[in-house]
Amino acid sequence: MTVLITGSAGFIGFHTCNIFLQKKYKVLGVDNLNSYYSVKLKKKRIDILNKNYGSQFKFIKTDIIDKKKINNIFIKYNPKIVIHLAAQAGVRYSIENPDQYIKSNIVGFFNILDCSRMAKIKFFFYASSSSVYGNNKNFPLSEKYNTDDQLSLYAASKKSNELIARSYFNIFGFKSVGMRFFTVYGPYGRPDMFMYKLLESMYFNKKLYVYNHADHYRDFTYIDDVVNSIFLLTKSKKINKKSYIVNIGRGSSIGLKKIITYIQELTSKKPNIKYIKMQKGDVKKTHSDLSNLRSLIEYSPKIDYKKGLLLFLDWYKKYKKIK
Ligand SMILES: NC(=O)c1ccc[n+]([C@@H]2O[C@H](COP(=O)([O-])OP(=O)(O)OC[C@H]3O[C@@H](n4cnc5c(N)ncnc54)[C@H](O)[C@@H]3O)[C@@H](O)[C@H]2O)c1
Image (cartoon, rainbow, N blue to C red; front, side, top):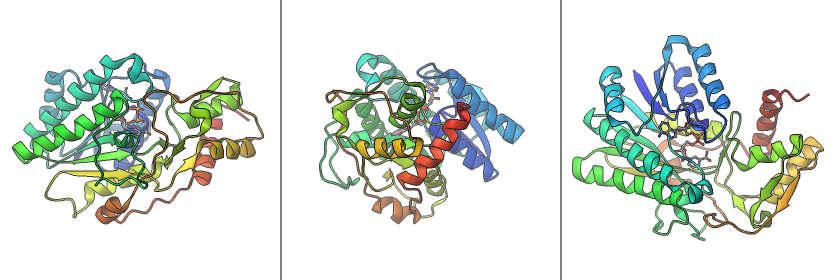
């Protein structure tokens, strides 16, 4: 059975491809390899999949904005499961580069959704984000809460995805699962994210701007917990009749100060940090309620931040050839 995974050269996409390939599925990866961050890292991820899985994995470099090409891919490869992860990520970048969010996250999203519907895909899985909760302070954040107040265009694009997917259920009965990821980290992680930048600051003395004077709290979620959840959701018998929105997090909130102190202890190095004020678009705290996820897949996240950071650090040192 073929699984189509968009954003396959991205962080979560790469690991999602990996788990489906390990489970012996055929995987078709789609990505435009854009230069939002290191193209070398994106190509490295694809090289690993090609090397480890040979013809079980096929990669197509294409832009999801091109609906004709996307439709031809559906016709040619006839995927049975679609996991749509390609998007322009990043909250702060959406302030300076709004166009890309409309193109990739709205038009691109629609193209994959609509082609999936035409191809009669049973369930459409797509990435949403904890950012849709805005500054909601009722922790832990539950899918039952109102999410009408997004603080950034990135968050608004993700909320729009949920609404568009919902309308496709109401009009066509086309079923979907929107997965609200909470700050994912781990090996082959994104260089634009806090954990990665913190290590760059420690080992290469790169200046790290820490917003809101580090008075931020995030539900840091280790990548293995995320991809195990995605895989189990696609297998869940409990997902059968409607459109779902589901949090995928660790279920606890950790302060950035705690992370900085812990990495300092692990590495015996001092980061080059400049503490600055709160930025527009940022939320202060995230903390996921996982009862919905647990009811669908009996999932329990296994990796706490201490273990996760050790694994991440281990990978980072190997990747950067640090002794
Ligand atoms: N990493 C997180 O903490 C996090 C949190 C919440 C939501 N998400 C969402 O999860 C998904 C995956 O995130 P990630 O962290 O792996 O990001 P990523 O940037 O590493 O991966 C996204 C991939 O999509 C590709 N892409 C972007 N626009 C494209 C287009 N128009 N056509 C084809 N490919 C395109 C990029 O080249 C990239 O490889 C995204 O939808 C993101 O918004 C991530």
